[in-house]
Image 1: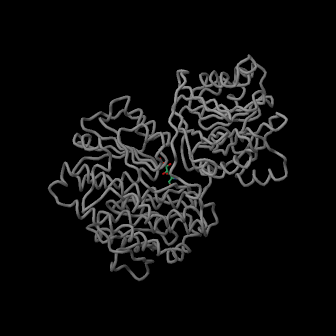
Image 2: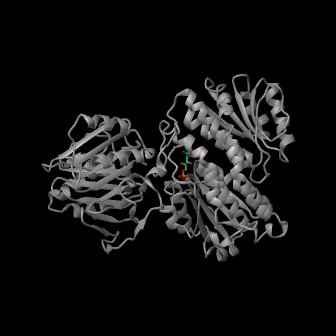
Image 3: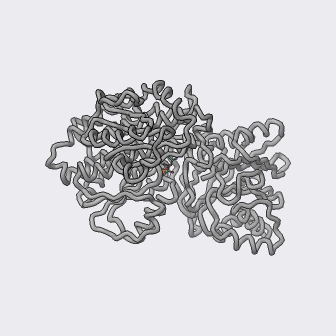
Length: 610
Ligand code: AGP
């Protein structure tokens, strides 16, 4: 997590670095800092706890400027958020380093550096990097050699940007386990954790690969692979524009992203369905041959992406007739799952950089757990996309709010396309359901649009929650993971403790929690489990619980309940539609509580550490 930006240019790079940090703030926002080599060739640094705006304000009173520089926004791992722990870290005012990742052998390095009289001013694992680079420079290495030698001393994950006053026109970058891109300009070059940081200055990017080290000046970029060989990495044009990551008229990115869902869903479907059927070629020309071999599905993911996988399990088994298991990546990677023939491993990730999900993929490869791998991902240039056999891109566009919204609903749409593709070779071949699923998918953008229009009514509903300390979410069947997603949204942005249960499980324990102080939120679509759900809701009413129900059209609830009706929707696409009001509910509760909606405390958008 943490965001890195760097630049070598023929103009003052500080404004570029600060704008880049603003665009990377979703990766972490505990502290921020910048270091440049100024006109006199002196290394200057400013770093502060808190957000990038604080750093930008502090810079107004300072004459910090330079043509070469690096900057960082932090998500604390080793050491609390503080000025001293903020990056860039500096050694003897001659080298500065920004780092994203975790250095696992930092204690051993620290001990040997203390013995070499280095002073430590932070609690971070990063500080050992800058001392190590310094010592290699001191031994006579140039910056490239010093970074290369340092990188080989490090164990763990890192993306690095390093500058020194000894070579004021040079920036060296390294990637090992954490993402890093190079922005290609005219007479200037940049580095960043993510293309979004550099869109105001370039749309041409080089994506570093694992083990790469890049030697960057204004005129050239030379890349070396893990073995030290000079390599050529392609320059790619990004389709994103600078304003695709702007907030526009919306108060928060999260609200903007909730509103973007009808378009995001339509984009995810575009070119993939036609004449009532899935266009299988749109999944890639190798997809058909792979899918012919698939006999079972394993989905691995984290957080919201895991919830999408849990919904899909109902679809793979119920519609496609193919066994499916779903697991959180941080558990999967340390289990010893038994390989099975015809197993397709589906890795779900908005960012494609989630450390546990990537590790799960690599572990599965190492052990031969799955015959084939497929990524469902929202970031085309991500590590996950580059490392899997097949890719199904969600087309949600950049998601900036830490709370995932449009990524989830487009993941579900993509999963449903995959269910059709797999199911055609199994139960779906005989059920004739494909056309009705495709028809339901086509109706979704309009239905989601109307769900978003419930915004002001949901805002009123949220008024009942702001003072509560706990909330219970209930659902049945594929709406149980939807309830889990609703609970996750509420807790991560409003800090209200929320739990989700399958409604039928209530009487096995959680019912003891229900009283008038416990709001109980449920989704009640008009499906085959509705009557069962209604009985569960009676159990809540009988204990004085206050019910908030998102219900299918025409469903009768009790007078005392707070009820909002949604469009009639096909049972298959229903979990996608019913997610939307839960997102809006969490959003409005958070706004009422005055929390930082887009950057909730302790979290970061992209979790690139274990
Ligand atoms: C969702 O709101 C979260 N912030 C989080 O759970 C997220 O879904 C998780 O970290 C996985 O991220 P990914 O989809 O980028 O892999």
